[in-house]
Length: 107
Image (cartoon, rainbow, N blue to C red; front, side, top):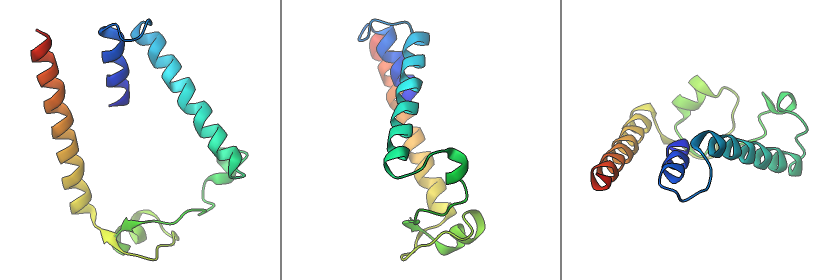
């Protein structure tokens, strides 16, 4: 979705770059942001972060945690795979519908 937005901004002249340049700059900014946040919380490399279990799951059922995030701590329960799938499809459908409407309006 983010890259679609960058593409749309480039195509519609909101930014003075080609899509390829805009995409490259967007990814570069994301990486820089992630590296900055990681360094502020004391993570010096991805390898030292993987498997460190330095986070807590919020709003995910214990069944999902046990199956996909073994060893992850959670003080509260939450939604299961079925709800996650429904919410994901709802967001996808909304995004696709909005994109189609924009293309029709632009014609």
